[in-house]
Structure formats: structure tokens, C-alpha cells
Image 1: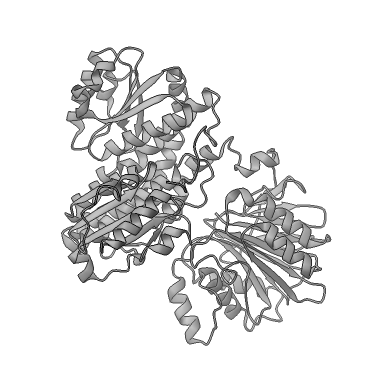
Image 2: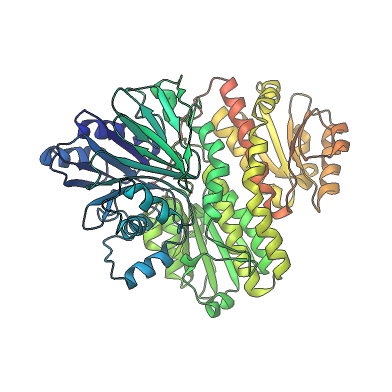
Length: 615
């Protein structure tokens, strides 16, 4: 996720902003920028691709001199990694400047309207649209005391999406305007100065007294005063809070590890994955990056999902969805094997390359092989401008934000979400009826809140993990759509706790693996209420008869299942195809707590790298 830092007060602004950007580097970014309102009331803007060090060198050459400014680190979403797309963005003859975290869903429509009015755009971003929209609303407000705040509020009334913004204007040299909707902002309070940031990290070396903006709030900030309003321009009284964290803890938003933070990010980022991509009227999803006409989509006779590790298990979720909803034969191919077995690919095959980084060497090699064979090749990646994003002919960004822990969590659930959206899109074109499409999309929009209910059980899951942390081996069992969950659960436990674990379909236990069971060999089984519930219960009975301890993941209200379990974790009910989005969160928490109880380095497990860029 992008980072914001702003300052207004009596100190030289540039060093504070550059230091703040360095504190925000942990969030991940691909470009950075700074804007300072100089003493002669001119905006001095400097932007750079790459590290903050690159920006700092350019700022040193310019030496902007002023006491108010804003800065930003960008993780590209709309538009590639270029200096033109880097923040801050300007509008209004260069007098208005803005930084923005979030996604403006209706930016295309707004941009069309602004272009019709003669607005000239210099970037591909949704953020520049918002800057020009505020500048347009500012016309006629130049000489009013609340002119900048009014312009911001009026512009935001036309916006759909998420934002955390800070706005600066040369006509208001003693004022900053900040606003939030779905993207956090915190304001630090000093002596005759204020700091604005996307999280407390860059503020804590100056002050621990802060005000958190809530959704739908707008702050008018001067050096001496902070006043908060709602979007109806009514004043809102805010309490000042004192942060007890140190700076290192603040980078992780108060969590002890990046992995736990990223597990808890999932309700927010999964909403980012489907936001703006759902059409409830037609009961369908729409991912424009597919870059295929309806005729081309109809011509697809086979789908191949290419990925490695966790991404391949997200692909397995997609396989079930494509086959059930769209009736298209789908297979998941391990990227490292794909090009060595002469895969049967033709121009009626759609290949999706799935990779968090977009740089996975094996997946990239498979992409090139599929293109040589004439397939439609599309990417599902997290990093804008990555090699896979550039070399495929279209695709979709998963909008999970930077994932800093080596073991993937939120990227997995967002990959699975995007694949489900694609399956609905193809399904509605082929055979999925309107009512079922609406039910699926309605249930998908309920997932973030249901994820929060699971996250609230973290302490209880930790207690269960403590009982099994000394096991040397463990099985994870699931059937149907939950078989990929079992595979991903076993991988997570292996990756970060170093406990040997394997995932199996429930029905495969009696074909060999059951021979290893004993009271010292626990089994984690997913027995949620779906069409395979009774079959899975029978598989669990077989395990119990061999004396193995059973940890069961079950649907809320299933009291009967307690009779089989040594321990049970309940999850909210959802539609069967969406179950992995909830059930995987449980396995992530279980693996995390097991590993931390064993004293493992969960963010940097041994022998592993975040992005595997060698074959």
C-alpha cells in the first residue's frame, strides 16, 4: 500500500518529509515524490522512480525551502511505474497539489467529463482525476476562507471508491486539507505544528499524540489548529489519543510480525480485489483487463492456470469455479513442469499466469511457452509493471498491496478472489443464470465481515496451536473446493514452523497415508457444511478410529461435529465456492501461532525467498 506524509509548522519541511518517506519504505513502493510550498508561495514538486534515495538526491539539488509540504511513496495500481504517474499530482495551473492512497472506482467516467471540459492529463492515474476534480470545484472559491475545504468536500461527493488524501494549495499557504474513506490517515499533534501520515510510523519520532480520521471525515489543518468535519461540512469533535508503540512496532501497525499484519489486512484488501468489478444488476463481474471480446471468450474450450506454490493452490480454487460455473475444462499446471512436457495448447486455450511478484522465473518461462503455442495468455499479479504483467496480453492486478512476509497470505486470498470473479464473468456468458450470479456476488461482498469474525478468534486458535506445536508431523484433509485449502494449510505450516505436514483429499487417506496415523500424528480436517459434508465426516471417522488427534474446521452451528473433534474451530457459513476465502484464514492463523510458539522467524523463514527469480 502507498504511503503518505505531510507537515505544516515552523520547521524546514523537506528533511521531515524525506525522513518520513524512509520510515514508510517497509510498506513497499516503486516511486516517490515530494511537494513543498515555498516561501514565495510557489509549489516545488520533485518525483523519482525507485528508492527514496533517488528522490532525496533530486531534492538536494533543488533545495525546496518552506514550512508546509506533502510527500508520497507509490505502489502502482492505475498506470505503470513512471515519473509521470508518481505522486504528488498537480492541477489548477499547478497551484493545487494532492497525494492519494486508495482507488477511485469511477475515475474513467469522471475523466471523460473533465476531458470534455478541456482538462489536459499528464498521467494515467486515477489520482490525477481527483486533483483536477477538486481544482474544478475550487473555481469561484478563491476568496472565501473555507474555499479549499469546500472544494474538496464537493469533489468527494462525486467520487466512488477509497481514498486517504492530503491537499495543498498555493492560495492557502497556511493550510492542509486531509480526508479519508477506507484508507487510513492519522494526524500527529506537536507544538505549533502538525504531521499527517498514512500510519503512525513517520510521526512517532516527533509526537505520540494523534487524532485518527474516520471514514467520511475531512480535516482542516494549520500549524496551530486541527478542525474536523464530515462530508456535510458539519464540525466533528475528535479525541486526541496517545500511541504507546515504538517505531519498529508501528511499521507493523502494532502487530508483532508482518505476517500477522498481512493476515489481518485481508478483510480490507479482498474488498479492494472485487471493488469496481461487480455488476449486481446483471449478476456478473467484469474484469476489463481480460482484453477479449465476447466472441473470443465463447471460443475458449480450455483454461490452463500456471503457477507455483501458494499461487498454484489459489489456481486450484479457480479450477473448481471455472468448471462449475462456466463449464470450461480447467487444469492447474505447476509452472516449473509446464514447458518440459510439451503441453497441448492451441488458440482455443486461455492461459492465466498467477504470480504475486509477477517475476517468478518458472511462471515467466511458462508464459513464453504458452505464447509460442498460440494461446491467449493473461496475467494475475500483484505488482504493476512486473515482467509477467508486461509480457502477457492483458490480465488483472489483485490489489493486495505490498506483502512483506515471505509466506503469502493476503495475496493468496486475493488471487483466489480474482479467479472467482473471472469464473463468474465466463459463467454468465455461457451458462450461469442471473439469480446464481447475484447470490455469489452478494455472498462475496459479505466475506470481509465474515473474515473479521474469524480474526477475532485468533487467541482461541493460538490455544489450540499450543496443544499441537510439538508434533513432528501433521496431515491436512479437505475435499472438493477445500482440498486446495488443505494443501495451502500444510504448506504454511511447513514454511514457517518447520513441522512436516502434508495435504490430502479426505478420500485418499485410506489409500496409503492412513498407515502413518497414531496418537502422536494430529490431523487438521476441513468439515464445513457443503455437498461433501457427509463424505468428509466418514473420512474423519476413519482417522478417529486410528487414535489420531483431530482438529476440525467446521461451520458455525454444527454441534454434532464436536463429538468427533479433539478441538474445533468454527467459521461463518458461506456459499461453497467461497469457502476457501474463509477457511484459509484459519489455517494461516494456526500456522502463524504454531510457529511463533516455537520461536520461529515467521517473516523470514529459513531457506525461502519472497520472489523466486531463478529457475
